[in-house]
Each structure stands twice: as structure tokens, then as C-alpha cells.
Image (cartoon, rainbow, N blue to C red; front, side):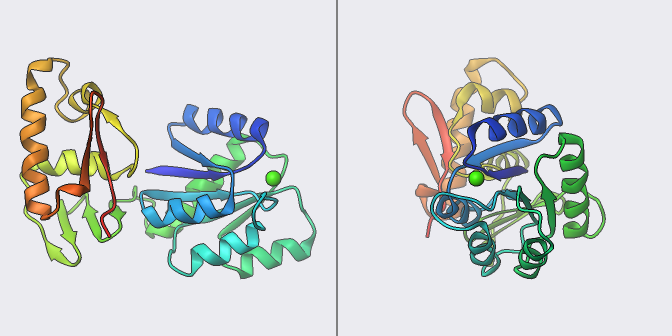
Amino acid sequence: MTILLVEDDRAIAEALIDGLRTNGYSVSQVVSGAEAVAKVRLGGITTVILDLGLPDMDGTEVCRNIRAFSHVPIIVASARETEMDRVDVLELGADDYLVKPFGIKELVARIHAVMRRATGSGAPVTQLTAGSLVMDTKARSVLLGGAVIQLTPKEFELLAYLTREPGTVFRRAEILRDVWETTWFGTTKTLDAHVASIRKKLGDGAWIESVRGVGFTLRVVA
Ligand code: CA
């Protein structure tokens, strides 16, 4: 459930990240078009907020690239306000357009609107995707390359937790707190046992990477 902010202006980015986090969103920021496309490809992004003036390519190009493989909602946020720009980006597949400067409340309202349209009901997004791994948190199903993977309830919660933010390294203490709802570190062996079992079921240990002395991260296995 992460919002991807594509913005190279540090002051604007900081203000938006602050505002979005205050409103309960998890936010990931990148400063270039290439990084934006790569991040969406990795999965786990629920909405993209896209600046048009980026250092490596125009935002319209980013929009076109993302649309070649993803339906993720895209909200263009730009200082360009001519009617022509607006029509251009909407035609390229963006879902909405906000003219800078705008307030956080307006942005949050637009995010709600595009996510509601994307899920068709206003219900929170229940599908998590990372490469060939697809998890449905409502149906509690896991597909890997189209094949059904059977996980225990705790294994499912742990894998879903990591799949929400592929590439993010979660500390052991964080995982125990959020997935096992405990701060008792004696359970860290339980965590290792669950990771080992999930790796075995996915058929490739590379999906869950151990970061020595820190914790675990989900890696998309090609
Ligand atoms: Ca810019």
C-alpha cells in the first residue's frame, strides 16, 4: 500500500511526504523517470504521483512507459497548466491532473478518487504483486507464476508484510512487532523457521533475502 512520489524538487517532495504520511500513507520517493518505471515494475505501488519536469525524461514519457505494462493509478502533479498539457497527459493514460501549487487535502481527495476507481468499489486494494508473485489479502491466496502456493496463516501474513514493500529491509524487531504482535525476542527463531518454510514453498530462497544483523527483504526473482 505504498504511494510512489516521483518528484525531483526536494522542498516539494518533503512537504508532500510529510502530508501523505500524516494522512496514513506509506510513501516512497524517487527523483527520476527511470527510477519511477523500475519501482512500479517491482510492484507494491498503489498510486503514482508524477511530476512532469524530471531530470532524465519528461513525465509524459514516464506515463507512457508505465502504461505499457501497468494500470496503476497515476496522478500528474505539475506547474504546467495549459489546457494542452492536461489533455496530453490524460491521453497518455494518467488518471488525474493537479496543478502546482496544491494543498495536501486536495491531493488526498484525488488519491481516494483514483484508488476507488481502480478497485471499482472504494474497498482497499487487496492484491499485492511483486514480479510473478501475486497475493490476495482478502481471499488469502498466493500465486507464483500462476501456480497456487499453500501457506499457513502466519506464513501468509509474513509474506504479505514483506510483499507490500519489495526491496525494503524490515528489521527483525519490526516484523515481530507487526506480524507476531510481540516484542519478545525469543520468537526470533520462530521468524527464521517461517522464512525457511516460505522459501521452500516458493521453490527459490532468493525471494526472501536475509540482511545480516538487520532483518529481511523481499526480492523479485525473475
Ligand atoms: Ca521537477
